[in-house]
Image (cartoon, rainbow, N blue to C red; front, side):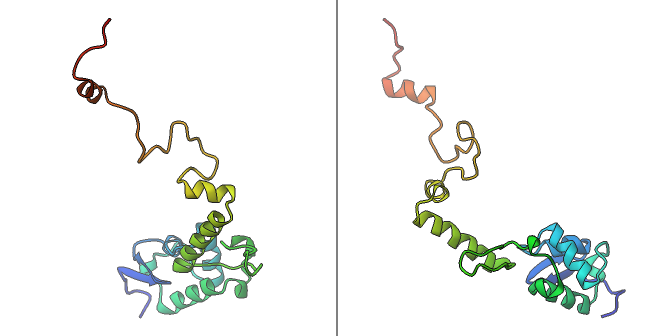
Length: 161
């Protein structure tokens, strides 16, 4: 495919991106990749981040996917990874898509199992990261009693003497 042909949808690491996006934003659409890592990946792959993704070649996409699969091989620093000092292996890793979702779920389940503070908050559907709870996060709970329903239940009489 020549660089002049425009593709309207480009698939990178299992996620579709519109061809009109800049390359850095298209790589960012892969679950588990943020903007900083996206720019680092494109720099190591030698792809212009300002180029529209619909114009990049299949070989460029293959280079990008290779860098994403093994960022350590290309010298991307470990502080950009989303899994530093893994609790099971103790190594730095970068997880993507379904692996990332599964690992986060198992971490939450482990926190619930050992009854840590975070696990307790997750188990009871409360805020976990120190947010206010007095006025926010009330969805799904009773918010009070409406005046009309109170009057109907009491028989419509007003509370006099």
